[in-house]
Length: 113
Image (cartoon, rainbow, N blue to C red):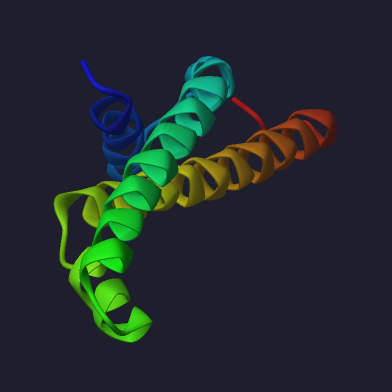
């Protein structure tokens, strides 16, 4: 299972709506554990894109044309996807933190069942 698939599966579980505080805590731990891998993927994608861009800069006479051609490459797409996964992971972590904070407040107020 890829990082993207794991993050997407957590997102789908959250969208379904019936997540217990224990499950939310486990999801946070999974995303936190994957965070280093996400950063590694971003670094690898950035490097691959930089190599493609450098290649196009060597073959093109104008830098803007080289950049446009490089942005049409699979490496650029992978770079964007990796950054989007990190953004999605950040947003899911924020949502889970808020969810757990709300459940804790409900528990303290005696409304949690």
